[in-house]
Length: 371
Image (cartoon, rainbow, N blue to C red; front, side, top):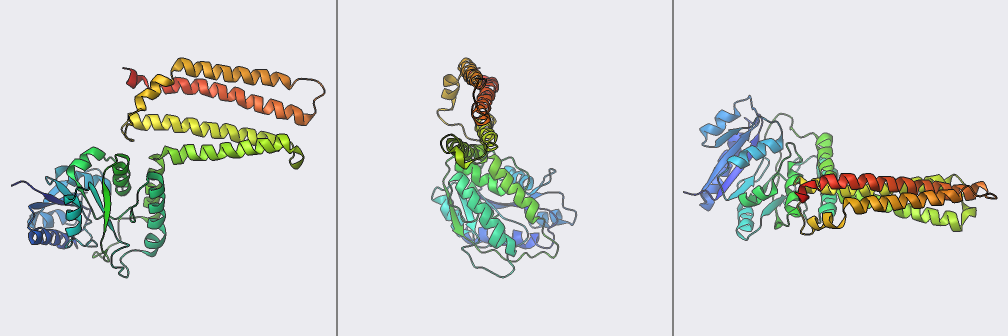
């Protein structure tokens, strides 16, 4: 008989609660009469969790690489179901009531996220900082960066199709695995929705594996690295606008400023230009390595911007800077006039050199597309 639903759970020393979680998963499968299985991704438990799971009829996969993401991927790779629902083994998820997850997958959604904020708000079910600071902030950032409308980015209770999972090509090993799944699904334009679910206080007596600040940073770092637009391009554009406005005021309203502001705005413009260059290179690298989905017009970029055109553009920019620099040596110029010419001219020369270097690096990254 083919398996329709696999309920997978990562595990690390959860002997106190894993049995309860497996029994709940099996009870759900029996109630809704779905052909299914329970798969445990064990991350090296030493408290007998594996034996408990095996004795209850669950499939146990031994995953050597440590981390929530590794354990989850190990279980998912072993799962046989067309649908997969992921839950934790600390007895905090409402495993008995997964009906809405299955219904949404039946409707054609690729990824269904549980929203703990829409379910019953039980006391001590989520730490204060997680409920009111960490999760809302990271969810807000994720929605802005990747144009999603998810209310709970980090709920571990979620359902997805095996086909969608294979498309996402997930690779993270830690807690940021939860963010990676939503980000990859969004970048691939998969159908995403959410359903309300209730989170309960953990049934274990030991301290949770989750570390608030280190794991929160891992999530934030992942969101930034997978969104070069927000990490490089938007800050670069902002800095560039500031430098343009500052330069305009220096030229036309110079009485409002002192001479020291000239190098500042010129340097800020150079920084903004570097941000834009880093955005372009990061975007190309991420696309070539499958971190970001390849757009339809991606290959056209290498036909339009060639090494020869880049070298010529950089050379012309540098020459214009050198010519401008020469005007700074004219006689009868005060110090303000000299700085107003020499400093921007220097920046233009440096920009030309950067364009030349960028062109070589860009062409190296594009060699794969030319072959």
